Image (cartoon, helix red, strand yellow):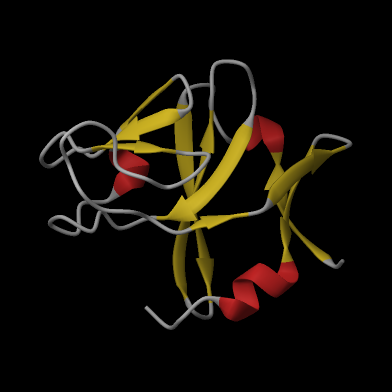
Length: 110
């Protein structure tokens, strides 16, 4: 498995997010209060809201436009909302955030 270095863990605030620009579009990196990192698409399927500007709580993010809540682990919408966001394998090694290269290659163009 090949991994791409996206930057330092400390560059993502606790309970916050950062955008990563790729040749295929933008991804959002989320860091939970427990310092876990998750990577998802940055666009809410409901109205295209920028999820990186949403509220990170537990292992979820709430869309800033219409309050849809998504699991950062599975990408599934929570509650009565129907929808899903793409998720990507990430890991932290020696203080660096890495994303699995093949997963980015499988992503459809934005």
